[in-house]
Length: 117
Image (cartoon, rainbow, N blue to C red; front, top):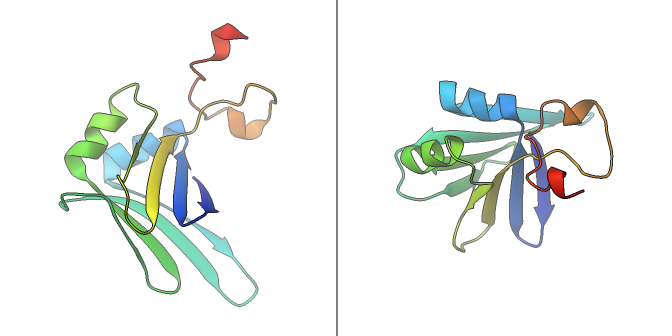
């Protein structure tokens, strides 16, 4: 799972296997280790009526309404997002890059623009 911070926005990109794990278990989590600490970040399916985010100093937790996530997972829809809020949250399927190859591309979703290049 890729995480990007930009201008009060959290953007998550999930590979095919991560989307499948989210569908199966209701949760995906990753972490990055620093010399003295670790930062974990997770997406979880829940009962909340909207996408919510929390941060406890060591873990970013995003909760997505179960039905909204299941609809996104089972469709060709690229992503889901909060309509606003602070921070804004974007959760997207990670598509294959059109201009480079690499190991991380193997588990990416086929890029819908691939046939145009």
